Length: 355
Image (cartoon, one colour):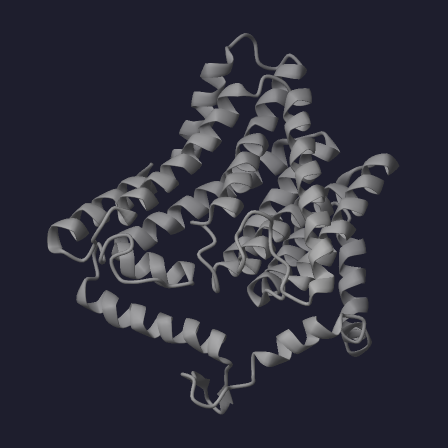
């Protein structure tokens, strides 16, 4: 709510000073409110562990169906995107969504002691990996790194994870040859500037137009922020930027950036507390996947407005509610907590996240 209030105040100031025009800024703020409602509805309506897992399984089924639709697009030669996005599509958005869902599936496969669960989670993981690669989203690829690091650090099978990582690093030249040609070309394209296009450089290294545009937007955001450092220009008040951190800084100032950092810290702290407190291996797997997915999305946000996008944030806040409710449901199922209705439980979880 503090994060939402910060955006609301910054946008109202933007309207008063003329930097925000039209209704788009207002509707963006409503979008943030929608995400809170998703979280709030989950924590207030999940009654037991079985129901929580039914919801989670439906989310995995949805990811599998969407992945099949994505795979069907591969022969077209175009970047894979989610359905219902129009002609151009948003491959970066689809990549972020798959990144998060893959983290959940991978963590479940690692933590579950049941072969059946490992089987279907690995199957869904493999299914999602195919369209994920063909989104050609470099921000999504980059997000895999912290995702794997979190799994390696926190998983009960960390020896297996470390062994796999060492093997991949040792055989990285060979592993690179296994990736599809479009994926390799997309990664290498990062360092191929185009004549006549704005080009950003880091020392002697020049970048492609897409990467350059993001780096230039970071520079513009810093220049704009210096002029209005406290509350920024308001939501949509500075122009479009496809980079979460730069956009948050220039639109809501240092107050908004601190509020965003606080929100991420609260989510990660609550998720880590749930992971450490849960006893059921599969519940722990879901919490671990949420933590790994959050780390991946924080990296994805370098090159996308990740924490604004509906198709990423709705499942994110849905699983945030599930993960934070699992310890409560576990205590109730073992009789550790006496009485208490669903509403009181939901209010408690909401309060902990907002602290």
